[in-house]
Length: 142
Image (cartoon, rainbow, N blue to C red; front, side, top):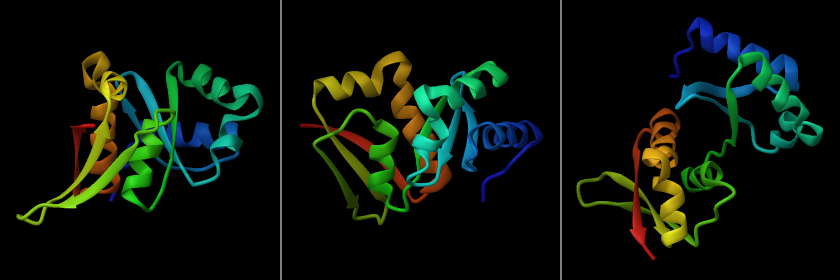
């Protein structure tokens, strides 16, 4: 169960009011506010020319990142990495029963995942913990 404090409630309320879309999740991460929205709702949330997101960013005085939710962990990880499109993402169950999502990455994708102190990789981990806690992620060579 996701915990919502007063600040998060304020962020969710602002997002809903300014975009007309209710977010499924919201949290601060590396100076950004991350919103997870229902499938198919991102374009509505962004608004024409990004107008809705600009309003949210101005009100919160923070950069905003939108991620489209999926019930499928692999699709969800792809959505977090967008616009990067890895060639392959595999789900593997190890002998100890743990579940791993393996991202097969070329050098360009690795640079994207691990630049700025592993920012994108850490975001994927944080979102998996919140929405798919049974899974971990690994990046493997192409």
